[in-house]
Image 1 (tube, helix red, strand yellow):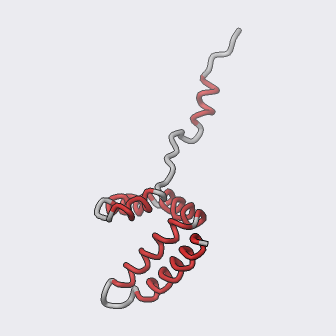
Image 2: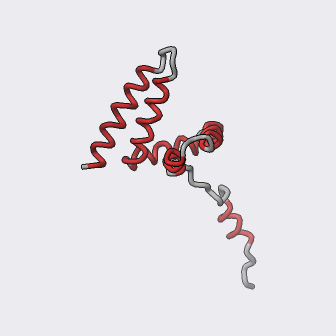
Image 3: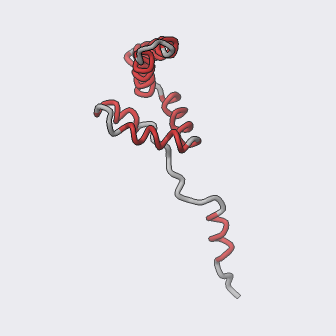
Length: 105
């Protein structure tokens, strides 16, 4: 029940924040970020989507990473939950390792 309430509240805040973004005060962006934080906290699909976007767009990921330092601790935890997974294996690395192995005579 708590997860449903958080998801609905986060969705409403996010939509209202997006609508209010053109206003002269930055209140729309703040409301949208608060709604997105609630959605990330309560919804695995949203969390995975944000993680994929951060992985796909490294420049945006770097800006989010730098901005995280200035946020309050609870928001830092929410942002860390969307940290992209680092792919430590280069494309084709396992294939090269397999072909470079010496074969017995």
